[in-house]
Image (cartoon, rainbow, N blue to C red; front, side):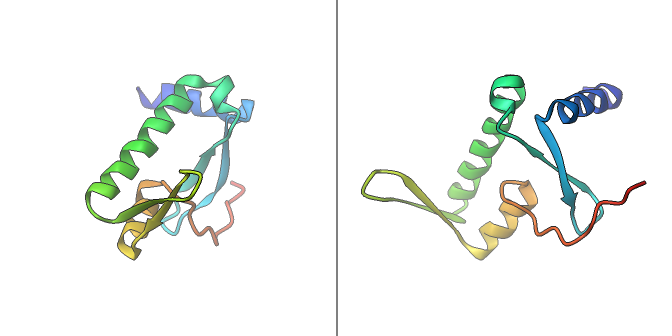
Length: 105
């Protein structure tokens, strides 16, 4: 996808509430979140997002950075090692610590 097309699609997603701007990381990069609205209003984005998250979690598991246990209802409980936490954060799989305000300009 070309930069212009990407920017247009991002603006469209933001305007429709499918994606929201939530902050800025420590390097000044803007952080966006895909909302639950994407599941019904942008199914292609939702599917891509789910695939990315699933593949990221599998990669962390294969590296031994994530442990999965199941409770009595067979619901997965995921635990990350400290290294796994940092890698998941870098991959955007978990929430960032957002201490910086988003500039208005």
